[in-house]
Image 1 (spheres, rainbow, N blue to C red):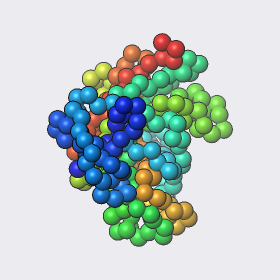
Image 2 (image 1 turned 120 degrees about the vertical axis):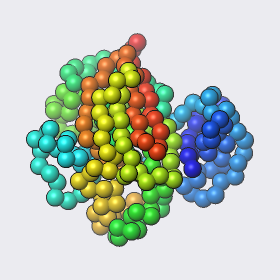
Image 3 (image 1 turned 45 degrees about the vertical axis):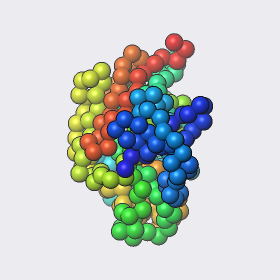
Length: 254
């Protein structure tokens, strides 16, 4: 099943995505069994981030090739960082490059786990069954800011730097898929989605030793490689079995 959030007459509404229509739902499917309250043609949808998380978790350096390219040490245990909800934007919406960004401006294609129930001190099996579904993320970074600042506060968290969507897929073996990043239709990265040092469930087990995760939280799983993007580009992140997240790149103020 595919679930999305779309804008209907200026308000966010959950929907169940079909081949041609989107059934509008009375509430979040993460929270229960919603009623169908209408439908709109899929072709007219204005896509929002498929969930606005209570907490936005992100994994870094989780693919061997990325670790080797960066000259980093392979992690010996799962660790996570945090991102900001203001950075989220939906499928089809622009990634806005700030006018004062210089140097490398890059995209990273990522699998995203959407948590479906409260977890604390989870076993691996509890973590595995806690995932409501999977969506796609594009981790946009301004590398000069990343190296200048003491934290990632603007290099990874500026408005529009975290496209996510277009929907949540609940019926897929996400770790058996392939991830592809295209810029203007040209393949820039292609790798097995599940070729991770630690999988999502490893991370959830480690995380919930110390903190509680809640329904609607998201966990971005890192990428094997990155590529440069620029205003005028269109960036597509495809994960087989889930879908395609596509966003144009604009320059701020244009």
